[in-house]
Image (cartoon, rainbow, N blue to C red; front, side):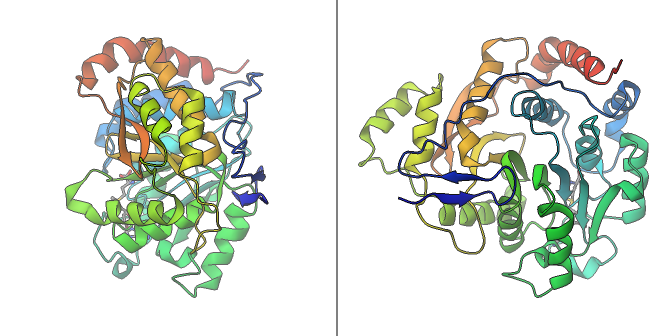
Length: 366
Ligand SMILES: C[S@@+](CC[C@H](N)C(=O)[O-])C[C@H]1O[C@@H](n2cnc3c(N)ncnc32)[C@H](O)[C@@H]1O
């Protein structure tokens, strides 16, 4: 069977769905550094003051994002993909995403929001303001207006299946996609089924191998369009894990609930892989984590790596995010999910001290 082209630009790999060898690409672990452009003071200022920035972000997510970007920088050697958000409001989360940018300054930063074009915010999700956004990213991430690529308009404009706005599509293609693609993206713009679905298609098309996209409000009953849009995307791009045909996988799944095995995770992705090119310009993404009302997805060839990464964090205890459950909730694929344990306690006692010293280390340059 011929290979399936996946993730359009960087680093392009062909997926052979028969052998699924794509899934288990070994990581050549020659650790590169976790070196951030932001200073330690800036980082600490954000973490101290973030509660006063208007917006909707919980503290716990910062550490999760830290773990993900550290993995991308140190193990996957991805440090030149774009970082950005669809739906920035005042830039509460965007500032943090920008704080994570690498010292090498190769990453593009982007922000997409309707801002002043309020009539395009059809479901009234948030209320972005360009000026306010720029002032917060300057204060908390030391990013100036010149350093961020902004699209002011509906993110639907970026999808040629739903919009004839060629200028917007050209902007996305030439500024972000064609350059490198994205390595870390938050989707938190319009919360309708269509917008969520469309945003996922656009980003799935632009993600570098091993890049991560997170979708906000996956668990929010007030914004069911998000779950609907995500479901539509996953249904169109994945096969269902068929219990009858995959008895051995099902059996393995029972054993793997607390101990996800790397090879097993690879097989799960293979079993749910669609063997054709998907409609609507969407590429397959595999969910691996549902945490704090956000769903995290990556390109399928790195699903097993991320599942494994989170398992390792759990194992060594101190870096605990308290994942103790693999659930079959998302597109029939097991994903890590929040624990019911008291997150704040665990976080403050076991995670924060180590994390703060990691930040100090990553933000100190000799
Ligand atoms: C929930 S808020 C985002 C919150 C933000 N991520 C934070 O960290 O606090 C949603 C944002 O999406 C913007 N928005 C709404 N519909 C949009 C659309 N179709 N395209 C782009 N942005 C949109 C709104 O202006 C608003 O700023």
